[in-house]
View 1 (cartoon, rainbow, N blue to C red):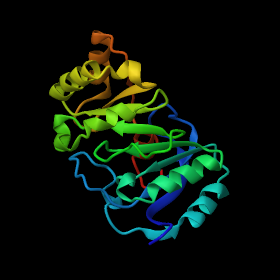
View 2: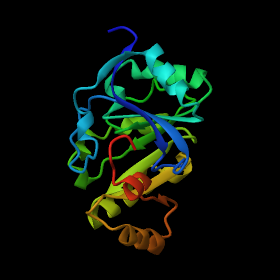
View 3: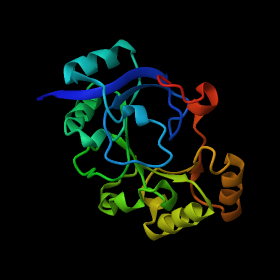
View 4: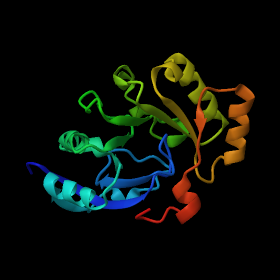
Length: 215
């Protein structure tokens, strides 16, 4: 339908990861995702949700008086009206980020948005979905995220970091341990040993709220 999106939830919490970790943020979680990463922690967003107009979404976001807004999923770009939503959030004066799997085209995303683009590792079970053409559309304000499931994933991620010169292309390269597959300490030791130009991060929402929905 015109000017609508299917929404799983809109909530106010602390950003759990990325450059703005720890900052109060409104999350707009869109429903649906064409990927099935083996470590996915938001499978509840694959289906269901509520159809809302862009006006309704903007009104709900504004009710929290936020500085930061994160559009996430699922895979938000699977719904075409995600693009005008991002534009309208930027026009409203928010600092806007988009969390995307990296499997869909990001070229139409408003340049004011900070794109957080995954590169899916071998351990994700969705590496074949990586859309490497997206790298040309990355800007300094953007971020690239690798979720590390094993030493193999780590070595693969380092190779992509070097191959595409990611540390010079974007503001942040993020290495995250896959929950219960690689410990934060182990990943930290690998990053330190190799002196990588990346930010190793833990998911704050898992530490604080055990990844309960709505946080």
